[in-house]
Image 1 (cartoon, rainbow, N blue to C red):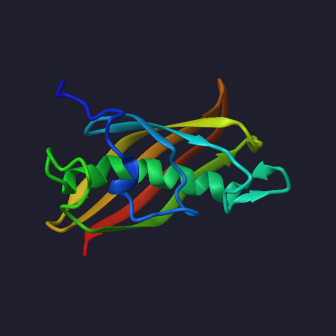
Image 2 (cartoon, one colour):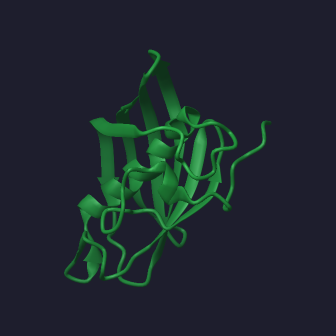
Length: 152
């Protein structure tokens, strides 16, 4: 197994998102085919509605976690600040999504994603990723997303 990139990486440097759209608080684990992240649910979150994180917020959290799997390959291994490339990613399809529960303020959700397939065409990657989000041990989201990721 190759070495993994872990907590010392500032995840924000590898996403184009910034507050209030940043939906990942901590990167717990990442390797070439999987990722595990956490997100602290706060009322300041743009997707916090009626005391809960909305469905849209859960989808965006999953998408940001998923995009890190493929997005990391566009950076040099020693680029821990994310300055090496400018990436843009799009959800090209939501193949499946089930949302079972909405977390409330103060909850910490853990998102785990695994690469299903990947097709590289040079500066563009098309991929499919399976993702699950948990609140404590309770599964709250199960989804499969397709992405198009490219350098700008």
